[in-house]
Every structure is written in C-alpha cells, then in structure tokens.
Length: 261
Image (cartoon, rainbow, N blue to C red):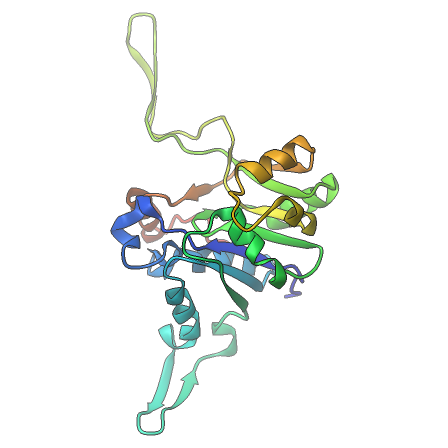
C-alpha cells in the first residue's frame, strides 16, 4: 500500500462520564468492542485508507493508552521469554502487526476539546491533517472526504451523519390505527460526528482552553471557512454503556459495518 503523508489527530483525553461503568477504571478510548479498544477500531479504519501516522491527545488515564501501545506487540502474538535475562523473541509475521507511527501528547486531564488539539500543534506536520474523536465508528470513504475538503478550499471540513433515533417511529391513520412502525430509524437530520479534515490555519481559531465545538467552529462558520461532507452510510457514537453494548452485539453477530479492513 502507498501510505499517505497526512497525520491523524485523535482526541483521547475525555473522562467519558456517561460511560462510567467502563471509564471509572480506564479511559474511554480503551473501552473494548469485540475484545479490542474502540480506539484500535478507529485507527484500523484510517489504516485501511492508507493513514499510518497518528497523534493521540491524551488526558484522563492517558498512561493506560501509552502502556497499551508500548506492549502492543505482545498482546496477541506468540513469543518466547527468557525470564532470567528478560530477552523476548516475537513469533509473528511482519504483516500481522500494524505499521503505525504514534505520537503521544499529554494535553491535560481537564482540558477542553479545542485546547487538546491546540496543545498538539507542535507535533502536527504539513498543511493538512485529519482529526477525530476516539468514540465514533463509520464506514466512511476517507478518500472522498479528503477530496471534498480539497475542492471546497476551506479551513476545515466536518462530516455530517444521520443519527439513529433513540425511539421507535410510529405512524397512525385518522382512526388511531398504527400503519407503520420502525424500531429506532435513521433520522433525516444531520449531526456532526467527527471525521474532520483540517488545514493548519485552524490553529488560528484555537487557544489552550477553548471548546472546539462552540467558539472556534462558530467563528469558522461565520468566516465561511467550515465545510460539510455528508455521509449517508453507517455511523455510531459510543457515548453510553448501552451504546457500548450495541457495538459489541454488532461485532459478535458479524455485522459491523465499520470493519472495512
């Protein structure tokens, strides 16, 4: 595969308070889906599209994310350990381990989203980079997203997704008889679900304490420097324990649309 030069910046520092059943003891990025951290699934999506260079913005329990990747080779591969000397020999094909380059950036335990990105500025190379939250998975075409961003010539492009309703949809006739019922359908409206492409100029809108989704994005939109790419396929954000269970159920059933690798 021909690797792309752009880096992927991922926010991994939030506490995940609505997922407290899991995040009391681990960062949200390490909550597992099918036995692997959700962060791993997200990175595999980017890897499939040719992106291998990642910048992880750490915060709450960030040391666990460092430990996970520092010991990554030994998690699932066979190896021999000489206990006395500490010598280890890995028994794995080279293609069995992802060729990732990861920069870990400590951005503060309580830092807001825009502040985390701002504090990673010195590690972001080049004019363009991809940016995302750690908790959303999709079957998005990243080549199409980047091409759309390039065509708009704007400072940033966000991806709009159709969220799934939390409730069933019911239609009735004039007599109150149900004529249609659909369990948790896709909504017609769009929501911002991450999967950004940004130019370096975005840092001019940020500071060390800002919330990306309020001031900076609002100013970009007023300056007409924020574009939208609409994705009509699968997208799912893991914000609650119930949503974590849903992702695990999809994986267990072999119907995980985000598994594009």
